[in-house]
Image 1 (tube, one colour):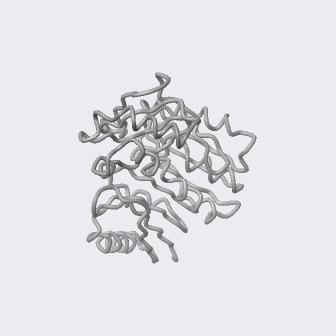
Image 2: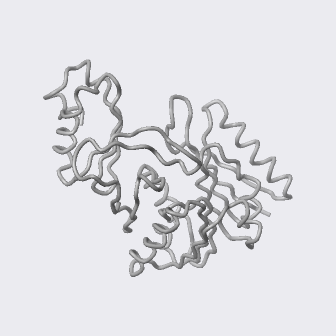
Image 3: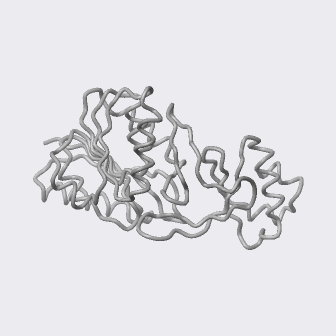
Length: 267
């Protein structure tokens, strides 16, 4: 994008260009105040780099418990619904109704490769089912997913049908509050928790894991060691012998990262 926009923007303006996402045929951009008057040029650049896009949407702020952003459409069709394709599946999403992060594509594939055929997997905070779909695409497993956002849940049901012929595994999708549903469920071979920012579900998800927990959290760079200690402490409280590896997944903001704690339960 920077090399393309160098034809239209000054070197000083280029310094303010931010990362963007392409979700299906929708480009999602941040336009800082310094570039508000150059929106047309940014749209031109996006269309030149990604000629298939049909919508350019400008990011607003997150709102509410379900992390839904505000968006304003600055070019193209007046919609925020699309089908995003990744890792061999199609994920229908409506950005005005449900949270979806295309930057986790690599993480979803990584987990799918760690999973073994025959596993029983639990995925709380499942959203429109991107993790479940990718894992079930590659592995013959039984997945139980839980989601509280009714609109995300309904999109997830559509996604199961959309990908039915591609899936090797089975997905059971439950509508409800993770903190009310999980205590009623059995334990699972593997729990994958794409935990929303500000939610602490460590004790609950660890309690449901027999062999593996993949727990996502947002922590400052200087607090990663503290997270590892908190997890080992919770393992001890639950009488579990654990190995914990914490990896940075993406930068949330300067010096704050989305991380994944891969927790192996030894006994």
